[in-house]
Image 1 (cartoon, helix red, strand yellow):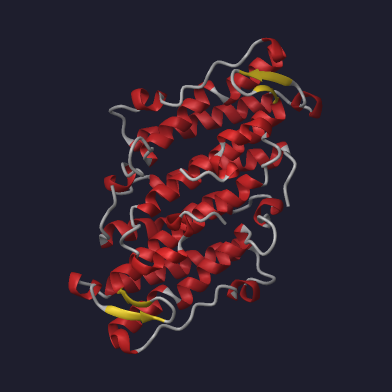
Image 2 (cartoon, rainbow over the protein chains, first blue to last red):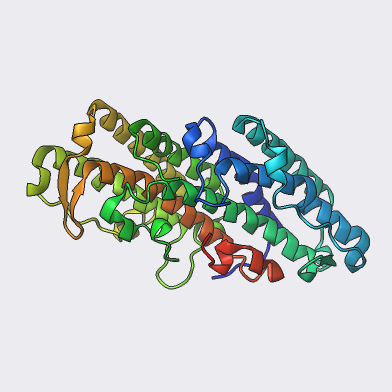
Amino acid sequence: MRRLFVMEEGVAILARTPTTLDALLRSLPDGWIAAHEGGDTWSPFDVVGHLIHGERTDWIPRTRIILEHGETKPFEKFDRLAQFRESEGRSLASLLDEFAALRRDNLKALQSMHLTGTDLDRRGRHPELGVVTLRQLLATWVAHDLDHNAQISRVLARQYSDQVGPWRAYLRIISGRQG
Amino acid sequence: MRRLFVMEEGVAILARTPTTLDALLRSLPDGWIAAHEGGDTWSPFDVVGHLIHGERTDWIPRTRIILEHGETKPFEKFDRLAQFRESEGRSLASLLDEFAALRRDNLKALQSMHLTGTDLDRRGRHPELGVVTLRQLLATWVAHDLDHNAQISRVLARQYSDQVGPWRAYLRIISGRQG
């Protein structure tokens, strides 16, 4: 049931994430956009900012480090809290626009690299995880999109944890059961 | 952090689900569309069929039963496996089109009911869960959309459980940690 990473299939997901988030979030009432799961958990607004920061500093920059320096130069550590500074005062609409533009540029950059199977086997060094391959980095880019897409749906659904009454038992996104 | 059900906010999500699923799934390579999590778990294709069956037999039909019969007439039991018959031989594109059309019609029907706060307090009888309110039914419609949206992202992400290598530890959609 598990798939191997195939560039064309991975890119098919990556190319769809901006429009998918746009379809769900643009012009949604503010209460949904700012909703979170309590404590220091993230809202949909925060997640979009995080994805933007990834486009700027993570996926393509790390791809270039692997291609140019291999294992000799560790990646920069990723700032998981950057969006709390960078998104401040911004509208969700402008964040969605920026994410879409950055993603488009990054997929163009990826395509222009004409990566081969040998390239995908190249190794780099993650500051915490150690040696990783370019294939793993690109597969993670895809899974990371999907992780945050699911997170946004979970955050929204859980706002109705009480409102659904006895149906709570059937909704695993609320009950917390994994499928 | 939890929200009360507000019709306008709930409808804002319900109206976006068809375009959100369309943005993610239409024309995605077949391997993704048919991917599942093993055993009798569902693929994105199966989930869209399930959502169609809900539009036909669950949310608005049950709303009508509550308004017309209250607690005296239990809902029909929902067939969780209907899509395996009904989607057979169909294309994903035709399922997405059908879901969008049914949802549009159902939201029009909902709007035409001009439900008041008193209506939302009306009670019906679920065949397994017992007494429920119309408010709980409509909140569940919203959360159910989001549950399946998250499920689709999870199913897709988990195809790369092995491909992401050591990043697996950071991706809770794959590692199974709840946020």
